[in-house]
Image (tube, rainbow, N blue to C red):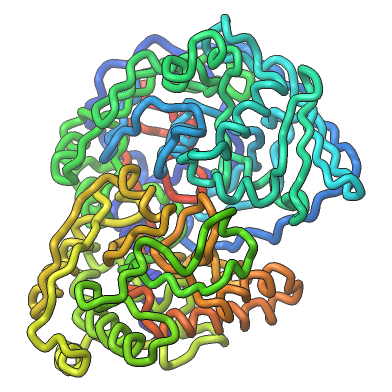
Length: 632
């Protein structure tokens, strides 16, 4: 019965948006040839092209990362493409919920901005993966688009050496071309002490020191954990741990403050001319560009926080593309005769119960010097935080479990799917993307909507009259979590007798509390979607003691968190899946996360956009603006 419903909702998602709403395929093949034309007039509605259904949103797991070879790997030289022929061009305008501040130095990048500044076409990382249409990711690098000419891994010396290509200019000629000193500087800034870079902790795990040996050679001395095996993927446009490359000369000549947001201290395909946080980015195409020439002449991002206003701007031809929740996408396609463009795989949406920091030792050796994992500032297991249990205290743990279970049972996922997502959401079953069709599925994971049982559990936990609590809803990362969905959950809690006090702090501002392990309130965010997650990766993930690294507000107890190593070392996929299922069983049994729905992210696209080849990054943000073509 479950598998039938799951398949039906997947079919709705793939066909109702992409077929019935006059979808036009935009292709996922090679990058289009860049050409130019006189500036196009402001966009106006035109008749839609003949409907051609987009490929169904069938997720494909990325292949396993290939281990590093121990020999130098040559690559094609960096060569700027020739200026485009007359055709194409135009002024592209994109509507987004928020615009990051103009900060490019990795040490000061916060939240999801490190991904957006690169995926939006402004900064660049070292490598680039070959194109595949969303939600597919591949592990094959596009060597011609890499900043690295060759590399060498010396396993005996535990080092990794990069030789940097020539011919990669910064936007400001005074800053010269990218060289080894710029690369070493950019990485050192990323994991410097006090860095707010999202992936500082992960970089510290494998990089002991990184330095420029000469103008073209970067030497990395790896930690005892060894050099990262999949660094090509992690430093690519997929944005696993991608460090943006900025200029050491700019830093030394202008100083830290002036250089970190200098609009020409970057190398991307678009050069920003005006950038105001939470308002606007105006930019122009860089031609010729060493990776590729953009098709459009100018690119503008407009911050439009409200979904309804962003929808109206699209309908009124004020913008060409919009980041919108699914039901707004459906309305936009209907009113513009445009199309919906998938930008990623399924995103699980649900609730994390922060404050449950249950590690008692630094079991991965990654907590950082001087960090006592038993003294997390957010570990407040008291009557004011009844969802937080004290590990080792059976009464406290059981009380908190009942509270979390009661809060879960108050959430009606089908009503949320219908009212918020227009019926286009699948049921989510765990923090790690299992569904009832999987061999590893366990029936105990099915926790349904049951308000009577929720009230009974509250009474058993000693909170029959409810309680008040802080509840964080990030308002500015709608590709990850839909704020309207999160607010609807708050109302369901109110209906169940609880008093959530909603906090809408920007993700970039609140994220440091996740890194510092001081986060101690429930919050709405994503988890791995059941429709896209390869179940042979690592379910323990980031829920462990790790200095400088993102966390969900949880740290798994030693016996569960230690499975991270077992999962990483296991080479048999079936065995790895079984260990991951055991981890998911722990999450579900203790209800550390309430899985609610899986949603596939789509963007609304006006018919004037005749081509766009986005890719699926670490998160489903807008990408590949250089591939967009506007009708003349």
